[in-house]
Image 1 (cartoon, rainbow, N blue to C red):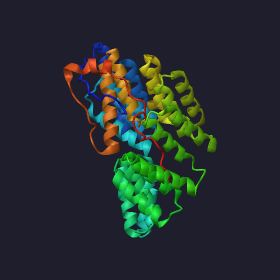
Image 2: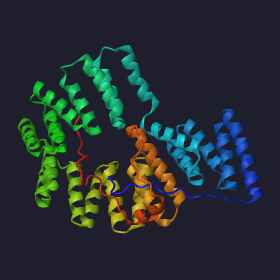
Image 3: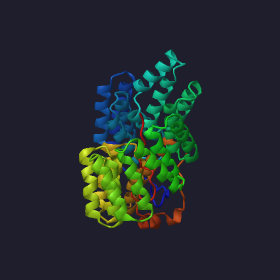
Image 4: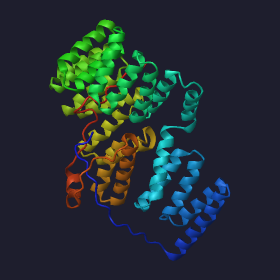
Amino acid sequence: MKLYKYVFALMSLTVFCLPLACEKGKNHIEIADGLAKGNKPDEALSEYTKAIEANANLAEAYYGRGSVYLEQEKLEEAATDFRKAIDINPKYIDAHKKLAETFTKIGAPDDEFQKRFKAIENYPDNPLNYVDLGVFYHKLQKEIDAIAQYKKALELDPKNPYIMFNLGVGYLDMGLYGDAETMFKNAAEINPSYDNAHYNLAVALHKQGKVDEAIKELHKTLEVNPKYSDAYVVFGLISLNEKKFEEAIAHYNKAMEINPDNLDARYQRAIIFALQKRYDDALAENMAILEKNPKYVNAAYNIGVIYHRTDRLDKAMEWYDKITKKIDPLYEDAYYNRAQLYTMKGDHSKAYSDYISYSYITKWRTGKDPAVVYKQDEIKELFLQSVPALKGQTKDQEIEVKSN
């Protein structure tokens, strides 16, 4: 979550090069293009690299090399080259398209999709095949597609609480809390001992501000399963929303007493430390999370935000880079915040490139363009004044829902 989202003005970009270097670089590109079309990828890569060595400002060379890398499934290398092409020429539409395609491949290998589609094709009356595809979409955070699959499964088996539960999770992640409440409530009524249904019903109720009802469902969760550690995480969130920080920490400590590896409890505790401006404690907690799970991207993001807030901007940039390059190339908030830093440095080309990446990923996830305010004359001042919010600071949207 961010306090401000403003798209910034596209600065004019002029690339200068010596005529001989330009000509030599373009000759290598022509040779490389021919080799790529002739299915000689290694030779093509060599020529594209020579073009870049001759002139590092040839966007077409990075685009061509990235395209070859993409064909070879070298996705990180491809993403790097497409981003470089966009840095040089922010209006390079084909490079933007290829970058989006690369992001999709990073998140969803084709063979994994095909395996699930084949199962549905062979056994179209088996609802669990649709659930399996839905869960796969869900892991990719493509909730609209996941919900469509869960609905197909529920049509085939209307009284299955497991399917209802998964559909509820889809609604929950889409922010359709009323629909999620209905699904979880139905699942819990069919199977009263379904602890995950009670827990996620509590989450859906809490999202709607129905705190008393949420607390009742949390108690039901613990009646069914006294060791349900995440229930105490939500109790902590309720206390946190009331600014009862010490009470919230006590709940998170209880969650970790039950399950020492409950990283969500540690993560929320780190948020409280940051809100109390105990930044060193918050950093230590997030670092401890990453030691247990190096892919816990929200912890990495909040490290970047803490450095951002405390004006340690080089460290903030380092962590945003680490997220986009190593932890999660589809984590759009890191691109957005890094764009802020580039804007503050006056590097509008890279800032624009990061905003475009943020925009593409947001649209890929949600099917919608990101909501932004465009005020060209105020762009720089707004970015200079803005500081990103901690992930999970004002909403409990990062609660991990359970799936069987």
